[in-house]
Image 1 (cartoon, rainbow, N blue to C red):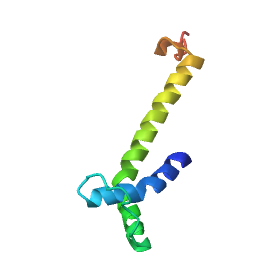
Image 2: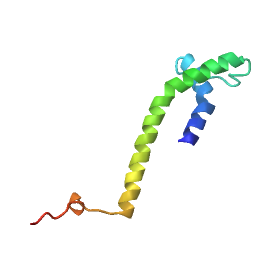
Image 3: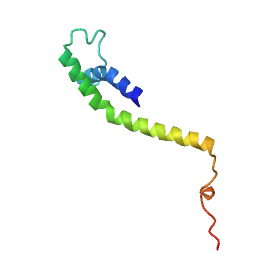
Length: 88
């Protein structure tokens, strides 16, 4: 998750600038004349725009992959393998 957050932090100003342009691509050298304050504003916009969805997708993909790997390690065919035989 750390790497994904670092990637978001790196791309957030670009995403924020594109959001500000109405979800259009920025032009080459888009940040050359931008002030530090403007870049910070774009970073904030970009993080707010993407963060929740990114974390949701990351959690879903991680859970899916974990389940897939666990089925490889412990291949149960049905829930019957987990049930205890209750005979008296």
